[in-house]
Image (cartoon, rainbow, N blue to C red):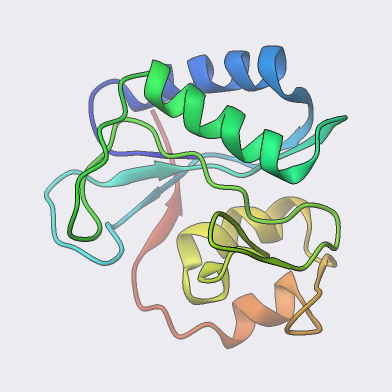
Length: 155
């Protein structure tokens, strides 16, 4: 999850509630991290958090539900790249599935480049093996060259 607009913590709490209601049970959550925007400049830093959940739904239904939740929470998607957002919900992994369709790529195709994803993911799943890179999350984080700051959020 990510947010850099409005009451970021409130958006996380609302997203968690909707995820639990619409997708499945949250089993584990990382700490919340405050991070510099990745891919664009903006004065507002992001909050980021990774959650692990269990769901009975297939990948396409989980993705559709995440996009619906973003939309219901007021997420506005703009053309032309990365931008600010009140809520961003990404599907990073689904078990060890490897999927490459026009609608969904799993594992997430850029997670290995982004400390804002790797640091919270490493907190809760350090030994998870990326099924394409064949490396653990802790190994990927160690090799990540992303220079942006990621620190635990202190409200």
